[in-house]
Image 1 (cartoon, rainbow, N blue to C red):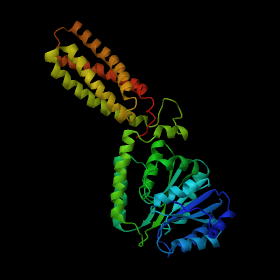
Image 2 (image 1 turned 60 degrees about the horizontal axis):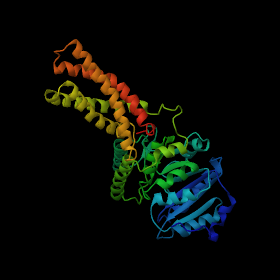
Image 3 (image 1 turned 30 degrees about the horizontal axis):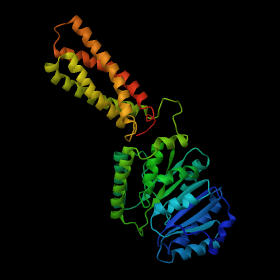
Length: 408
């Protein structure tokens, strides 16, 4: 629960109006470091940042004097406000503060200021200009300069490898406490993010990436805080559970990725020519190879009992159903059960075209070489299937036209 901004200690926020930049500093039991951090950040904003800016201290149910320190600092400094939540969680604090913000760009940084503030302008400038939608600091970029122990380094890099393998993430550093995004984008993404703790960042970035938003990465200079209050073991456990939950949501189609892409104007520049075409062709090829092998095996098994034409028809029908289902999910990224039956029927139309090509090839072969063996039959059928593959790809792209813009 967010405490209403009505206390007199927060009167200083009235002088700033609606700023260009709103930087949230989430805190939990940080009475010792909070004032030093906010004053340093405040001086930097006044002297180095050409935009109007606000600092929002987001207190996450602190049990020490953090909230009292925050009120006092907000009273003494213009452009500082305080929000208080009754529950812990960095993601919960960011969702609350960013949703309520009236700034053009919303950002956050950790209270320890581990990230060098000289990275702030490179972080927010592309968002203010409108060129990018989300910006993140990266400790894993080759140009970054980082001081931290091997344990945290291994965990951080390992976690990002997990994200690349399981969620096909392209961003380099999910958990760096230095991020920003345009408020209009935040308003559409935040209601879809379930996590209220450390996985919040990952969930936000994966969703932004799947929609096709521009994610700007800034190499940072970063020094580890030895007094960090993060429970690494518990965080890893919750992050892995979050990865599993998000993977399932993307697989079954419960996240409205295509709808968000349209509403945020991230559709392909040329209709019918989606982003990621090369990857789509590779995935189609993988499915095609598997289908062809299955088709050949079925044909050879059925030929002795059914004859060439019947074996071809049966093997092609069985593999066509499997091929359509596999391409639906794997190649074109269409999730959920909605429209699946209709798309299978449309896939059978594509199957009919492939059947015509292969059966026609068999008919011509048997007219010319009546005594052809089943292995010769199979060779001709495979060649005909290669031609049919081009037809199948074009046909399935039409069948799954609502999903061809999905980027995996």
